[in-house]
Image 1 (cartoon, rainbow, N blue to C red):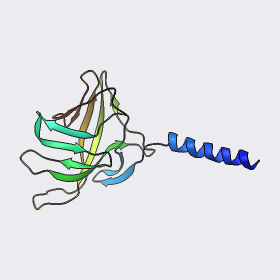
Image 2: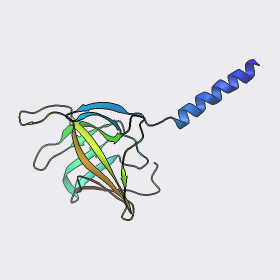
Image 3: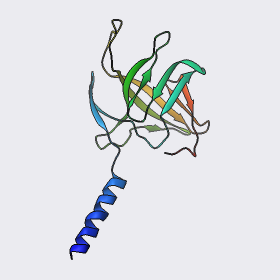
Image 4: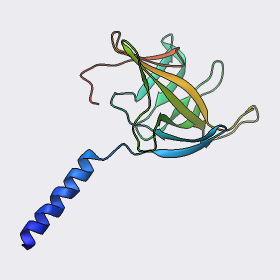
Length: 148
């Protein structure tokens, strides 16, 4: 009986670790509480370039990164893709694309900051061209064989 209980507990632990929802964080924005996660079922981490050069957006797997505006220095930030209160990413599926909301907040302030809160920008994945876009202008190629 003790062996059965041990096996059952091990099985439940294994199942909960493998089938758990994405880790997510709640954020307070000017329009209320939102939930974000750095994990969706696509390889979104990496560097996104504007016409192959700076300004860039860099998304790291730990939810940190860099966001550079036009003619501005690179700035560190925290980021996440909007998800529901259970950690499931929220998106709109198109014919050959998916549209998400990317939330980011700078981790340091400058004297030029008019707004220091969370900012929302569009993030899209285009399946036919294997490209991902932030704000429709920062682009990264991806591969379907990349680890999800």
